[in-house]
Length: 156
Image (cartoon, rainbow, N blue to C red; front, side):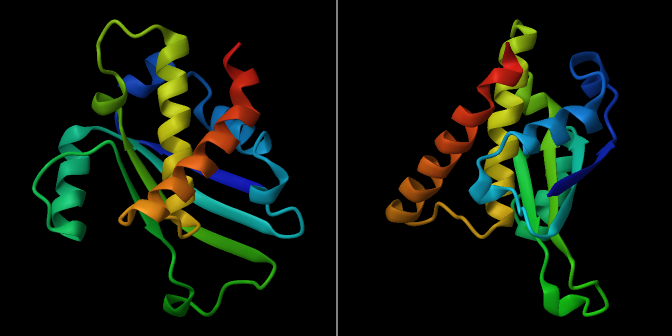
């Protein structure tokens, strides 16, 4: 079972997604069984942010002085050995509202679709997926499409 702890530091998110914690946890419930951690409790933190703040984090942690759509920071279990063996902390995801909300005339459905797609992308990074090499990109893209296809019903 996956639990998402949602934090918001940009009020614009509330205009598009009212009950953010419920929304993202419902998305995770629709993930294919392969990604649901059925026998353990897995959780991670999602920070809903903006370009200015994500640029600062991108500079600090990746040495890239520009904003981006999403940052993922997988948890390194060697950093904290005191966690319960029953729970798995996956890490942190930060998403920029400004990046998702382009173009400005996006319908609410398209905004949510874009948000879910980038959320899935960040989640897969927490699981160790990457897209540096072409073969890894294809593997990650396939996993993204598989997960997204299982949750399209939430957009209707």
